[in-house]
Image 1 (tube, each protein chain N blue to C red):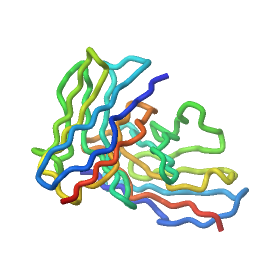
Image 2: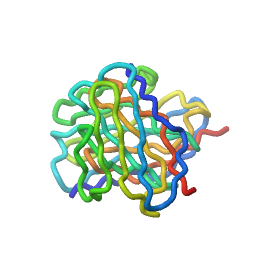
Image 3: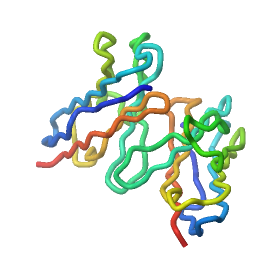
Length: 112
Length: 108
């Protein structure tokens, strides 16, 4: 049974960056895709991108191209999502997902 | 980009009734790579259905998915009180792996 545990809530200033981690336990880490999905307050789900750790190359939604970087560290079974040039509209809960499992979500608040 | 349109936006039903939720894609979803999720307030989404019709682990048999191409349906045969939530469809056959806007299933 795979379990995904994400890093804690963050408060960031506009223009800064945030890096959220997602540590997997149980199951096989490297061979399966990990996706990042965000949900702004009161809004729907938005797919940001994903990575298959064994291949190492990430795939991003065009909306986030140039601002998001998704990486994975096979040695620690941890995936990361870094979002730069933050603006207030990036305030959201950020989730990682792998197969049927989702992380608990990380609230990122962007505020001056 | 494949746009998924869910209908209705809100569905008001009573426990014991049958729920039918629709998800229509702007272009064909390859290999029926269509999933359904349930989300309750303050919780992460829960995978219900993948491959358009395969129930995920531990999902009750009252949930079923059907469809192919551009038209997909999630059916809940007899609503239980815990089924009232927001439901999303997602296609994962073509990047970006887009979500529908959601259907809120509320108690009538």
